[in-house]
Length: 48
Image 1 (spheres, rainbow, N blue to C red):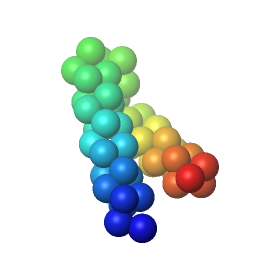
Image 2 (image 1 turned 90 degrees about the vertical axis):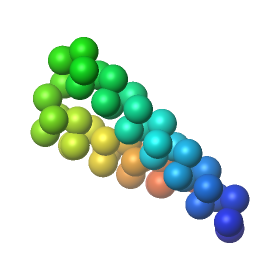
Image 3 (image 1 turned 45 degrees about the vertical axis):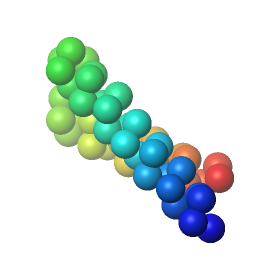
């Protein structure tokens, strides 16, 4: 159980880094990032 929580933290940190990078490249706006980020996190939670 503890291992899964740690893995989730690593995944969400990775998501943050990816989306921050995209935002810096002006690929996505902040609101797009927020909606995409929650979709990605929900997908990962459902697929575990």
